[in-house]
Length: 300
Ligand code: G3P
Ligand code: CA
Image (tube, rainbow, N blue to C red; front, side, top):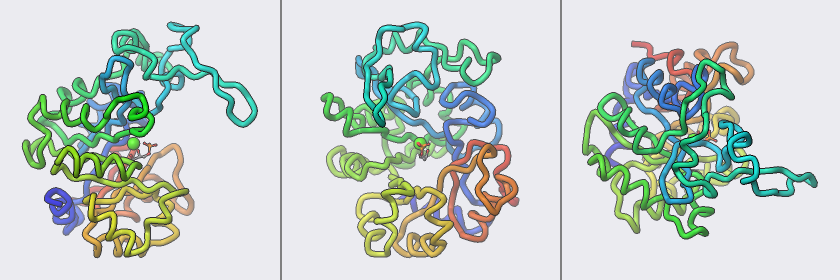
């Protein structure tokens, strides 16, 4: 709970609230590209988020989806390498990251889908993300679909620790200029990090609108505090139950809701800055995930 404690300490004055750049500065740059991470740093992010997936040859890459077709041109480059899946009665073609080697993933354009100006951007490895961010901001990796990868014989948690270790960042507070917090929707993934891999990094348990509600009682929060230092609730969970923030703090947990974005401001707010301000200074959350790092209301 070392860094969790630090986060709570940061939150004692308005200027100490923590800004997590969600997929980089993803309102302005293609998500999970190095240009998106770079802009997030320039816009003052305390942490830059990386969602993690694993390639066929076992390399961690930064990508939100487990498939490549939404944010790359994989359909053009590898037109036959899809799997067909039936979803709601219709057939969909999916290009899974885990079916491609890193060398193949690196052939893909990860920028044009967002804007032609970013043509040629690549899917970064986690190591490339660390190299860019180290010394300038913190890292906030998320283990995505770890159970699916485990079924393939791959341990995302072990790969994560290995990559961090290569940069001397696998222990809490190893580099004060590059704090690391690991997040996951999977309690098992966080427990694996804490118990099996003996990681002392701060861990944040993500709570979705759908399944997270069953974790928001005080006793459940105390159970979370046995394996994590904070929660990352969907912001709707706080909107309908603002007392969640106080209960989580009482259980010793930091609170970092997601996701604040100018492209979808929730009612009754009229701007994403105003929405973040309300959560930070009225609801009392410690930090926020936002696509718009430049609009973070730091209130110096
Ligand atoms: O990790 C916080 C938030 O990013 C969770 O949602 O789907 O954007 O990874 P998602
Ligand atoms: Ca995420």
